[in-house]
Length: 286
Length: 349
Image (cartoon, rainbow over all chains, first blue to last red; front, side):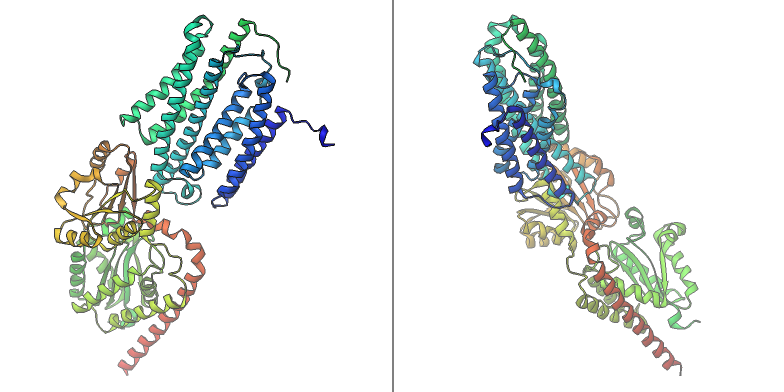
């Protein structure tokens, strides 16, 4: 009987989204009861979701024979996966309270939200990266850097909540479990630096292809990506110069992340146009 | 002339009905409170009196010729303090006879305090009573009432759990500082004024790892003495504004009649340390920090009312104990009232 059970990438993505959702609900319920949630349970739930999502991405990668970053659905899933992976690196090291709950929340939005619009998971030509490993590395690193920026925006949201609680003299509930302002601010600085480095590396790898094939690069995609990179770099420089700090820094990083997310769709559309014009072979059936 | 027991009164304002900004208009320095006490005692209508002046309350306890003459005392206070009688009447309360007794016992036991169950008020009442007694402002009636109130407060504390689970100002400040700075090892603290509450707050911060404490007070010797006790340094009061940028936590508890720290000064300070937050704790009455300072980015200002409301968050859990204590004090007040009446009857016969 068990031999008949076949795991598809789609069903694994759904299970992973459900596990992330469960982790988020768990955090929400415990916090509404004005208690701190168990870090072990949160870690175990996120770990479960992450493993299932890894399996799903692996299955999808095997289907398309490339890194699964071919449509908005896959990008959202890869972003959620990067986010949770980064949480596993950052969480135990810096022991930021409630970061697990916030990560679970965003991972749920990204992974479950990507199912809402079915057209996001549209079929696309095989070998979308044209067998060019530099472009594949560029794409993977770019999305991974967005994972850094996603966790940075979570830290910024936590900062703004804590800051609001302190300014309005709130002492109960979520406020008492959030990390300190200084911890969050320091974390935000480190994440911003790492994210900028990873995105710069991604652009550098992409440039290897762009320089030699400039006519194949859609202008909009290049402009949008460079603007996002420039935006984060500017925020980083202003922060180093102490001109954009604490509250304004948090707002800027959240705004930039929203901008980065909204720019992903046009970037994606531009890439699809590009691959179609290149006349790449067969479509993968979903 | 009325009987003594028909002219016991307490006239005052407290944190219950009077907002901080109004309380600071009524606030007196210790010497002003003693002057007022002396002035009232010289008044023909007052036989005995005592002025209790703390951060959260200003109360005049007394024995008058007749209760109607309390209005004259109200006028006397308003004239001296240069506040309108309408404003004072809006926030003031006046209890007489048995109600006055019950009020005094509740105040002594800390039931009427901003942080319910605190013991600091009893020490303040004892000090005030000692000073009034030495100045001959109290007589047979008030002496007996106050001495009995100390006993009643002790009974209420030992027979109930009103002090259990109580959170001190120091603990609240430490929790808030931890929410801002995380570990407090690297935080630098400035004490403005050498008051007892600020000293206790500094000690609470020290116990949580703060190593760098500086004290500044109008009297340099006091600052030096306190700094020595806390293992810190003292700076001259005239110089503290020049050093503000170096401090993460500033605790103010001076007796200055007007605000010492204004928005402009703090905004300038924050320009020099934009990435480091500043936690301002204003324990003074009148306030040492202009409330507009709160608008400066990265500055977190907490005054006495804010800290007390946080400290009283577990009040619901202690409600039953508070009611028990109130019942004990009611019995004490009634017994004391009967004793006083008996004594008066005996004197008459």
